[in-house]
Image (cartoon, rainbow, N blue to C red; front, side):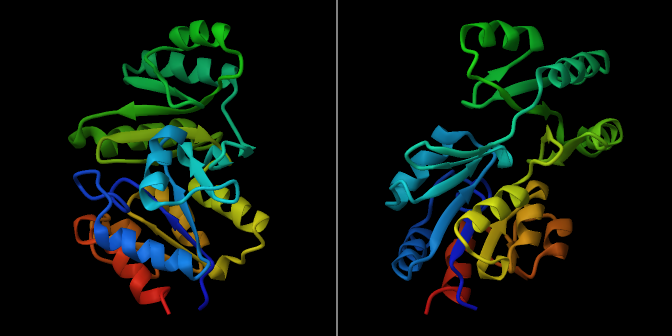
Length: 253
């Protein structure tokens, strides 16, 4: 298959455990770009937490794109937003009230990546900048409590929101139609790229929607078994340039 777009998660995928991009990953990405392949970083991070990686990879320009905040926002590298879906304040208030009642610690994350320990703190900040909006709730828990807390949140919020495990200790709550796969589908359509021309690589539950959307969905070897099970292929782990190895094997001519 002649792949035209490669979507990459960052933490645990493009970045190794030291939060570095390995030389093998850089070289493979550079060669793929020389073939005309689009590289799209698809991350739970906000713009600034992704932009530095594009700079390190030598990618720039108004015709290059990122998907940030877990699928809430699609924007070009010159910060032109082409899609954004955020949480309604009423919904945020209700969730915050319920999580506090359940004694579940949370932070709210806004469109610039800022975090707030309470809904009241968020509203005070929003009074100073009405352009800001909430993209998601992040629930941080102990590893031993992750599955139990996730199940509780799924039961409470799945009907109206998208609840997903995003790290070994974090669970996030998004608007219902927001995930990495939906955003990747929107961007691919905009670029007139078919799903079968897309390769996506990720490592955790929040990467499952984009792995399923892509014609070739690849799990990192450091992924949990449920992510590997839905993937077409498995590449090496994040500390052994799994991204670079996958690009070399499936994309480079």
